[in-house]
Length: 166
Image 1 (spheres, rainbow, N blue to C red):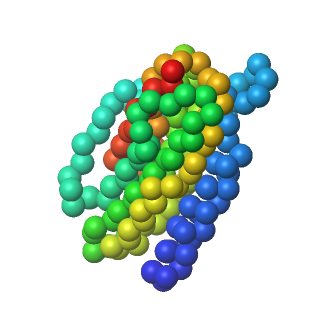
Image 2: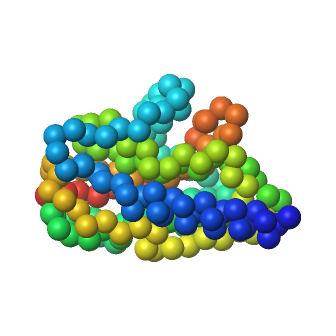
């Protein structure tokens, strides 16, 4: 059973990587693409976007990070992702990754429902995704990664990575 859960998680991360490879922070043209979300999830993410949640070090954790703070057009951003379940039991969560932009709505990159993290599960990838940044509006952007309660979509654990585009 545990091998199946690990395979499902690895497959999910591969699919996310493929999906994210099609993602453009600001697509070419005048129109911004915003993925539709259930109203309760969208409101919850927007309400909690400014919150930095702390967590017990013996709980499952997620970490998102970039390779540097300041970026310019045509720079490559390396987005890292770490997931860890130190518990002796599997944990089921929703996994969400989204980008908070300076003046636009958030863009959800991933919202995977009811993902089971096996006991002792570790995933660490400093090159989870790489982006060649187009010319986008200057400002402070923030990546968010979170585990959500599968029933309520309340944020259980969240990490953020702030970066600036000039």
